[in-house]
Image (tube, rainbow, N blue to C red; front, top):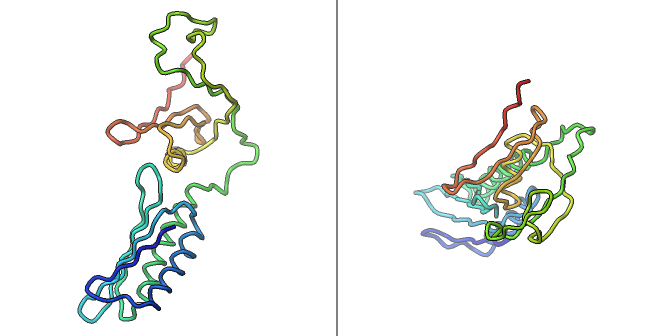
Length: 194
């Protein structure tokens, strides 16, 4: 993780710089080791100090954490801003780690197949309806049981364009995917009425 420290209208001394680098590295990586960079800006507002923190979580959606604090002591002000960032990361981690999952809720097994992109150009089809000879890769995979918010979070953290999951609310198959306009779309099929 890269920590960049700058002073706005003031000089950041070596002692403060060392304190910020150590505390930011320990405090941020305690909750999430995927943070790419943290930028710290220390500035002076009349007789008080202001510390702004900006951290890049390294996810596809460009998720960031931001916090600022104002105080009389620059060290305490930085610690206060870092505490706010740690609180955000703690909440973020709690959302992606569900401690209340049922032990009997095992993921479904499925087969993931990768097909060549230009399938439409080939007219031969195999017995299963897929184009013959165009399978690039095939492997077993798990379809996890997740809530919609957990599925979106996992899709972002794993940098996936789409994610199929079994909805924790009703057990049906659902898909979340990132649209071309940047928004998230959720497909939840209706059950067939007999």
